[in-house]
Length: 337
Image (tube, rainbow, N blue to C red; front, side, top):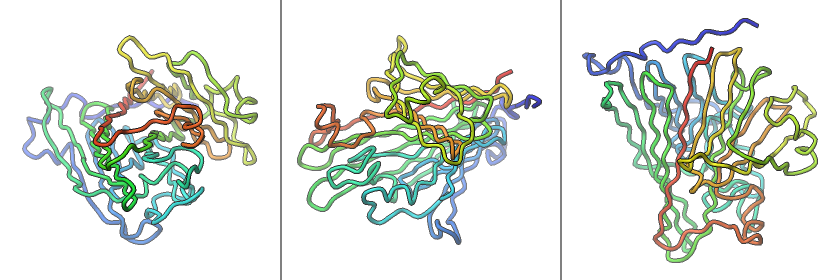
């Protein structure tokens, strides 16, 4: 297969020289008509020489499809975009899991259904409010697009967690930054597990790709993962009957305290590096499914076994009343020879 040559048109373009910034950076809000997401809001962020993003305000401001130099980055499930579930219980989360670059898991449960909370929690089923987009020229002359919003997860009289999110992309660089602040607005202690479900697919995660993680040990979750332990860093061969594999990477952060996971595909000519603060997200899970062609990279502050398991292990993350926690992701996409 011939190598694809990627270029980043406009990478050296100084946005401040333009009469109209719409030439290089534009945020377009829309409402979906027809299909499973009928009536739902979407915001498309498009930038010259950078990463284009589709953001879903009615799915907790999750990141759906994403492209770099015209190439798709995210894995999209057969479900695709859909409306939020009004009351997701047990494994209902799967009914509305569209994939996308980042699906947020939490705010009260991550992983298996547990203690009355459904799989991966309810935050991605919440509709954001106070959604705003902003465009500015950075110090280096490039244009920067950002979207912010607030997502509340409440349970009547029993608690109130708030997520405030900011997502930024920019011209001239394959850089995406996501920053989240979660606050316990209730009057008591709240379990607050949190996980970023980053979903990558073809052509990036394909036969010639490889994954590296700043970790010293890879721990398989079960026998299916154990069978694939020696090949966790490569995409498995397509297998319609293949079982999912889940691993945990025991992180070894760099001197700045950051952990990272990098997918490189020299045939496509693309590298994607995901990094985060290991102090706030000290755990990293990996999800691979031979039947679906997906790689999930999942920085987290918890396990994927549900909050009851973490509680029993003494590792359940909590927020005291009034306490705030900030987490984030940094995604860098760049061509490789």
